[in-house]
Length: 96
Image 1 (cartoon, helix red, strand yellow):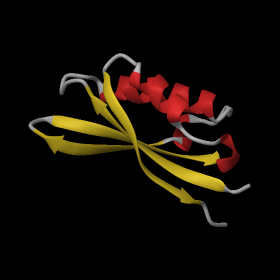
Image 2: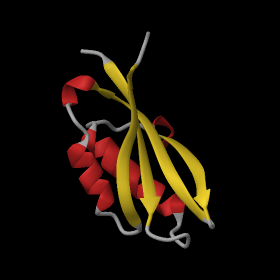
Image 3: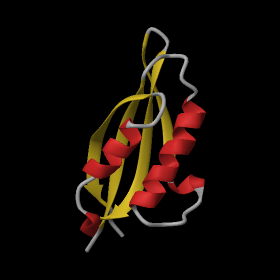
């Protein structure tokens, strides 16, 4: 099976949410989901301005497509303190 690159968009519940803390906790969930002990730099972080001081946290990571859907991961991240919603914004096969 091939690897896929997944991008998750996490919306915080308010502009006051510390995105670094949310990133750290989300990375733990991602690494547990893809069953790896990768370093933090294996999960890329992008901060995207949304408006009115609110910023979204985007995570990009590689996983084996045999794992299946990310529904369970999305639910786990959504249940984190400070996370309002989670959605997959991009999935594509890795080349090489």
